[in-house]
Length: 201
Image (cartoon, rainbow, N blue to C red; front, top):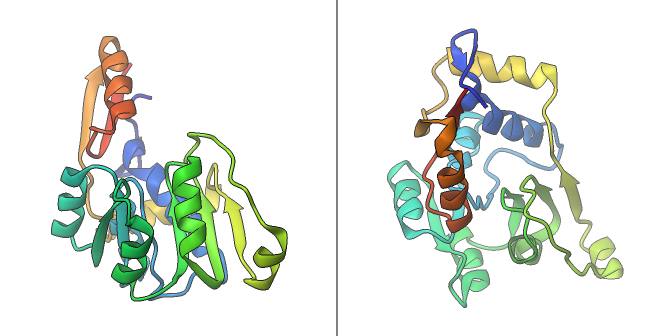
């Protein structure tokens, strides 16, 4: 999409925040909750909403280094064979909430397994796949699994207000000509894009 402005906010900056605002609308996600983030930038948005301890999960060590530099409480490489154990150790115990920005079977399974009783998983990424779900343990653990696809107009207005109040940290945004879109998609598939790539139309 082309980079446009919503008041003083570029649209490329707004979408990730809408996701974060959608999370805030859920009753179980309280301040101080711990959320893993597979992309590595949502933590800055959640911090603006008052969350104080956020664990970032990614498969790219460079992105994890950026997350630590920007204030993530801890980071875990999702390709580590002991990622599940290290995630719980980094968070200090089971998670209150998880945001899966990949939406693959492996990432969703990791997030579900790390939730505490009453935990909340928000699925955002559209990579695809299936996750076996045992019904009785899901009920006994009182888990909530929620999909988040598009924010509402009210949430968009909150996004703009947050940005205007300078409560959101700028994420890296690179604009590329339309003829470079294929290269950008290859980089996304390889997991080497840091921040966002916006096509100039």
